Length: 518
Ligand code: XMP
Image 1: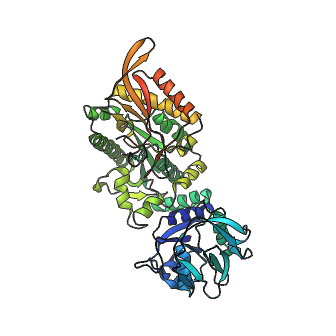
Image 2: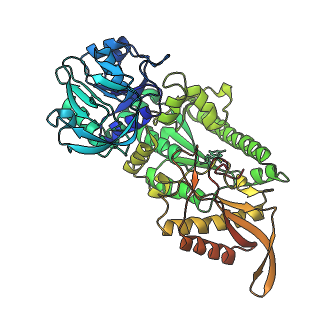
Image 3: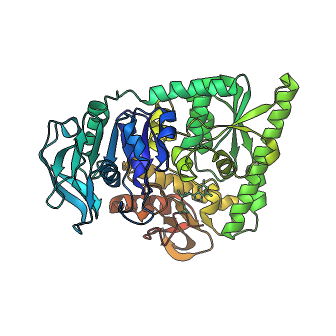
């Protein structure tokens, strides 16, 4: 792999993704990694990320300088550039000339591989206080800005390169090209990592891990579990059994999507647990959001456990081989965020499945552990999954249960399901699916207002539209949907859904509002 050394800012994940966009596999490692540890990972290149601090600041993230002597090509970015300069005898000065944001840069050497083929004048994204004032010996300066004489340098002999700006952000016009130049031209790394290879590699790995054992997967219908199951199925076929719990809080067509489209495109063995009655009974009389969530979580585990117990009993009865493996759709950001690598599986297993009992003792199969979401989608498509599954927007596990503000009843679920289907259909028809992160449709079941429909007075419920734009759901902004689309949704919902006489738009960002209403 190419190792991306994380100096503690948010840039490392972005760099890792950009390296992969250049068809080179990358992994993130902590800056405390030693030269021996690097050697053990046998990387074909290193990228040092930006960081939060000055190389002179107290507690500034350190880096083992012996890594520069390993003969592995290295690209230093921003803080990483300064770390390289300092370690190799250059000078970094606290000039006070801070550069932040879009900055014009002049490429003074377009012959060197790093900036070859780049325009002499371009705009890049800067974010630094200190500057490299003198390149280390043996290094050629490749670019400068008005206040930074050494904005990029190279030492071809040692295969060491650096840029002061952030090539990984889109604001740097030719940033991706700089990364590709480093990887392909300077370091000579081939562009041969793609979803086809990932699938082949994971299939081999799963076969090795699982052998002839049986594997269980809880399918939610979401992107991650769907793709994880599909890849495991490709590896071990009917050794995999998927369990899908229909809790009655699904949106229109969702169960069919899993039972028909998903099964048709993958051929997985699927067992649907029809738990609709169980859930609606358990939710009767409850309107407090947290209580609802707890009940839904508990009932979900109950149904899943029951299915497990049945399957395990069946497996024992037929061939004495119990189910030993459980598939999880854990993604790379989860792994990085919970400490980057070993020892994180258990934390996630509880979180992801909602608290599997300890004594079940499954061994986890996590085929997406090294991947980012967009890569998971690409792999899903490569595996032949339809767009309705692969491009699906996030939908909460508790489903419509937390989109009815008030008690959950069958009648209200049916009403909300209809309104939601209309909103989704119109957003899709308007081509807005990729623009919005998700659009919860919420029923205010305890609120009524007066309306007039036909010749009569109505006293109905409002439906709230909550379209949001987001990168990661941690923060979000309300999406400025075109008025004509809003008008169409509003008309259709009030005309077609009995009991609704008003459609309102939620114009709150997150924070202060969360995306869901409960
Ligand atoms: P909030 O409402 O916290 O939502 O801003 C952030 C993101 O998480 C989703 N969400 C959930 N997903 N189980 C899930 O699997 C849940 O209990 C849950 N609650 C919220 C929400 O849809 C949004 O994408």
